[in-house]
Image 1 (cartoon, rainbow, N blue to C red):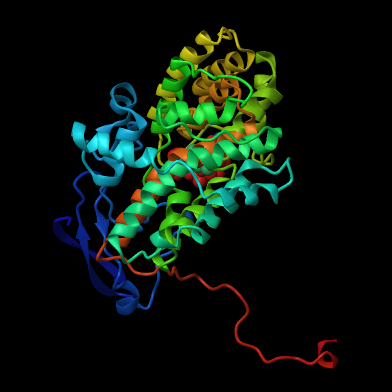
Image 2: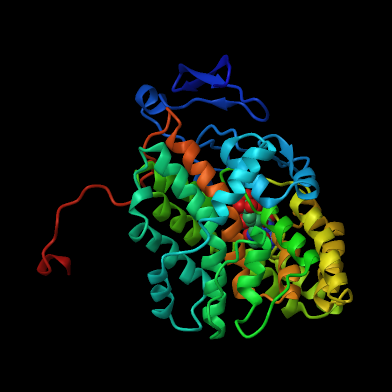
Length: 432
Ligand code: SDX
């Protein structure tokens, strides 16, 4: 619970109202406006929620001005360097780093839930082979509600826990099978002897006809990419999951809503859009043309992978991602990857251009991730599915926190109505 500090005073038509304020443990305090409408008859107005705290949370904190990201207080660069994705999952879900015993138990539980009900394979066969993997992910994740009735009662903490473990465990299988289905190759089943990230790579790239050995450098890179994408405060898809959850919808349906929202190119779809943009630029000498388009008010084009609602400095995840890009490309012998060269030149030019400097537009998590995933062999259509796989632990942790929050109510925003005032129905003859 935040401490109460001195109230804010609001003056409306010469009448003053006192609104309580609250401090968090870190970051901006809030003005509690829950009684504003009852006392003033007015709403606040904040499309896109640029100045609105929709909840209190102790999971993730971003300081956009200095480019800092903390998961349960731990800096993202330390977790990327020293931890691993399943340990980060434990941290996000339970709030503390696990002891060795807690970690071993958690890994075993996740490992034992990586398989899906065999009938789930039928859902894939209903899609065209060229279906976008995110279309499949939305459908199959939502369909989990039809198979795991023993973990859909959101009022039962045991069922909430089982559903959370199931979702974290099954997303790699769901995503890998979406990729396999698009290639016409058979599904590869999870192998319990492998790590979470190695399992995902093997389910994507192995074929039944021969052994597949996961490259440890790529396994480590995949694990870091999962960690970097795990959670990010109340972003659009997390807010979607919370809003869906506030109605009491089951966790599988809520996560499916998060997958749907993440798909947008302004959000999780930016990694796919960014690589497509880098390819369209094609060479360093065409960069000025695209920079000019990004600055042109009349051109809807935006530099994908650049800018962020919260970061007004370098996205700390992009810094780690850039390091991973060099490691992977070096390992794969494609260090002079032309797309990476365009990306690095574009970043340098943009960071020196007054337009981007003045608007505090920096590379975000999506700027380099596509280059890595492309080099690893993933088609661009799989990039956002991989983002969704990793973000599932963040969504489910935020969902669980919302369910257990005594202040939570069903989300029901109001509006500024600018439509027609009341008027009587007119018959066809009266309409002229
Ligand atoms: C993710 O919320 C999260 O935390 C998301 C995420 C997560 O982990 O969940 O971090 C993941 O979604 C990262 C962002 C990926 N999206 C992209 O890379 C798409 C390109 N970026 C833009 O669409 C944009 O920067 C947003 C959507 C990310 C943020 O937009 P905002 O906060 O609404 O900012 P804005 O649109 O009001 O832009 C402010 C100004 C505008 O110019 P003015 O109207 O003030 O003159 O900056 C301009 C914009 O036109 N601008 C850009 C730009 N981004 C913003 N101009 C050119 N290229 C860009 N990329």
